[in-house]
Length: 456
Image 1 (cartoon, rainbow, N blue to C red):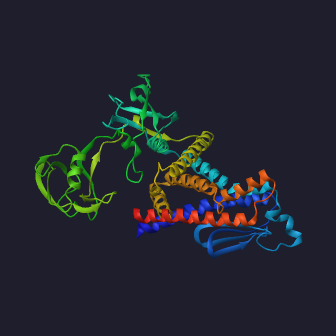
Image 2 (image 1 turned 45 degrees about the vertical axis):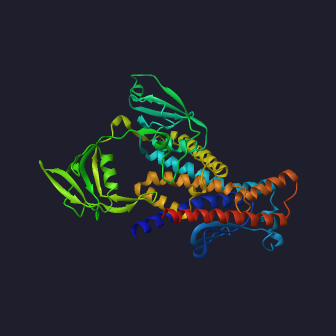
C-alpha cells in the first residue's frame, strides 16, 4: 500500500510539472502574440482550486491530473464581441498560430534541459562501462578481452557510463551493424594509448527490452566486483528469515556440494521452489547444516522460481571505475542540452522502429508504468528523479508533435498546409482528421494500458 501511495504521489508531482511546463509554453507565446487567454487549467474535470488573475485569465487546478489545457478566445468556438476580435486566436497570422501551438512541445524540451542541468549541477554518481568478457555466439564474440576494457563510444557517440551505453544501444535496435570503441583501463591511466574499434554484425541481434538487457544480449560481460558468500542481508518474511540463517553466516555448501560461485548458488535456489535444500554454513568458526525451503515466486517471464531472500557481501567498486558526472554552472548547460538532443534522437528512432516492426507495440507504456518509474526514481533520490522527468518530458514533447489532428502536431500540419496553399484547411476535412486522429490515439492508449496491466 505504501509503495502504491508513493508511486501515485510521485506520478502526480511528475505529471503536474510536465503538464504545467507544456501548457505554460502555449500560454506564454499566446499572450506575446496578443491572444486573450480565458483559462489556464492543470488537470481536467471539477476544479479544486481557481483564481482569476489581474490579466483576466482564470487559473484552475482540476481533479483529474492527466492533462491540461489553455482556453483561448476563438471565434470558431464561441461568439466573440467586436471589441475583442483582434485578440482571438483565429484572427492571428498563420505563423503566430504555428508559434503558439509549437510552444507546448518546445517547452517540454526546454524543461528537459533545465531538469538535466540541475541533475548535472548536483552530480550523478555513476560507474564506467567496463567489460571483462564477451559471450560466445553473440554479436560481440569477436572482441577478445584480455584485460578490463572501457566502452568509450558507440557508433561515434561518446559514452561515459552504463546508462549512456544502454541508451545508445537501444537506438540501434533493428540496425544491421554498430561500432564499439574500447580502451583498456591501463590506457585510460596513461600506461597504454591503444584504443580499439570493432564493427559488430547486429543483423541477428534481437531481444525483448521488457525482459532483457541490450548490453548482455549483445554479448558484453559487465565487470562486477567479487562476491563474498557471506550473508550481508536477509529479507523480511523470506524463506531465509524463517530459517536458522543469520547475517554474517558464510555459505560453504548446498545439498552437499561445495559452494563455487554466487550465480551457481542462485541457479540452484531458483530451481528449488517449494523444495527443501540443505545449506552448510560457517558461523564463528563452526560449520553446521541449515534446512530451508525456498518460497515460490514469478520471474519476469512468468516462470516459477525459488526465492531464498539473502544478499551476499560484495566487494566495493574500485575507485578507477567510479565516475561522478558533475559539472559547473556553465558546462552543465551544454551537457544538458546535448543529453536532451540524444534523448530526442533516440525517441524519434524508436517511433520509427515501431512502425517498421523492429520494436514491438508491447513495449508501449502507459500511466501505470510511468507512475512506477516516477516512484522508483524518486525513491533513489533527487538526481535520478530529475533524469526521469527529463526523459518523460522529451517523450511528451515528441508525442505531441506526432501529425495526429488531435495533437499539437496535427494542428501544425494543418497550418503548414495553409502556409503552402495560402488558405486554411476546410472545416469538414479538419473534422474528419480529428476523428481519425482521436481513433488512432485511443487505440495507442488502449495498447499502452493493456501492456501496463500485463506487466503488473
